[in-house]
Amino acid sequence: MPEEFNHVDWFRHSSPYINAHRGKTFVILIPGEAVESAHFSSIIHDLALLDSLGIRLVLVQGARPQIQRMLANRHLVSRVEDDYRVTPQDQLLDVIQASAAVRVQLEARLSMGLSNTPMDGARLKVCSGNYVIARPLGVVDGIDYGHTGEVRRIDTEAIFRLLEDDNMVLLPHLGFSPTGEVFNLKSEDVATQAAIQLKADKLVIYAEEEGVFNSQGELYSELLTKDAEAILKEKSLSTITHAALDACVQAVRRGVPRAHLISYNENGGLLQELFTREGSGTMIDEDSYEKLRPANIDDVGGMMALLSPLEEKGILVRRSRELLENEIDRFIVIERDGAIVACAALYPFEQENSGELACLAVAPDYRGSNRGERLLKGIEQSAKTQHLSTLFLLTTRTAHWFIERGFSETTLASLPTQKQALYNYQRNSKIFSKAL
Image (cartoon, rainbow, N blue to C red; front, top):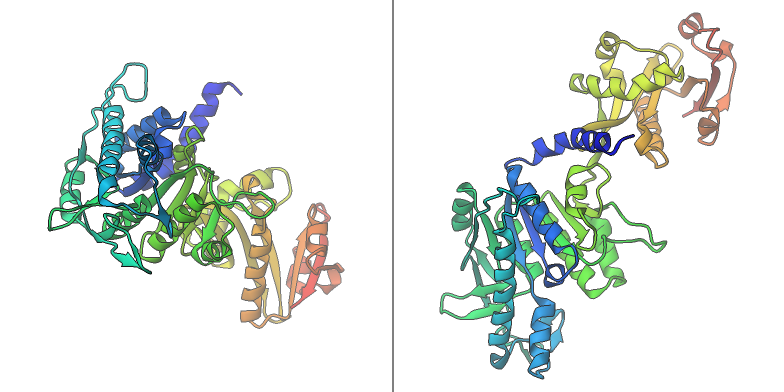
């Protein structure tokens, strides 16, 4: 397929996400490491694109490597305790200078308007100020953290005014106290508190790694908060990834719908995570964004798109839109980000105390996981709720899948009388049943 058609196809598939994200508020943490990465320009271009799509952006900047380098140049030892950098008075100016340098670099890149780049004609407005109110961390376990602090409050009213005026807001990892002091804050804490207090729709954190991996080296595309908390307790992650994941969990636990970990080393990782179903990093949420639920009339279009290719191949019996609408209460679906990716139906035969499992289908891009089993369990549970004792099905192509899940081949005579009369001898379907 020509490359331009791939772009057209991608754009068409991303349109639901473009509509869903418009007008939403995203807090995005850009650590100092990302600013020095080879893909920093691409990150800026991606942010400009999000802004052009009507997404309200609050950017939080970090400056860990820049601070470390500035202190090293002065032969000063930087002390880190419990993931917090101790900031004595004689190092505060270095921290401020490093943070200011990163802020200016970000603002300069966001001000570009070069022709033949995604920034052409962007006209981004970026505002920064004393929107993070902080307090000292104080003395903890005998350690005086000096000018290291924690977030006391985010000036959400001021930030909302800026966002309403189409500004992008930039928050440094520095906070200010009512007494005029400056405090060095963890950028993850600033991002988390900003997302929580602004009631943001998403928290996105750039990190070196693509996200969180299991022991086999496989990327978790999604983690529920309870599973993420279990991983945090294992202490198997790098320090920075651990801090990023913990920030995501804290944000979601306190009302942010979703948080994302993506890599600044992956070109376009932000766009892939936000505008494709597969994503590119690890998403953390309270409940799975794939929901198994009863079907409703609004699902018919998505179900037809899912079933039509299988009907054309003769794998499923053809069903009209009218039939699907009339029988919609028989179906359950798996919805993923507004799209129907799987469905199944249960037709009860109450006199024979049995039910037919029908129309079990999973979209091609989502096979090879446990979605079929989730549908089967959902149908079995529904059958039990209706006090049915047997589940049966007719299939031409997927016999082994059902045998592996406890079904046994049976005869036409074992079916309910009404179903026997409707049997299509031309299809010659095999019949399987399972006691519930």
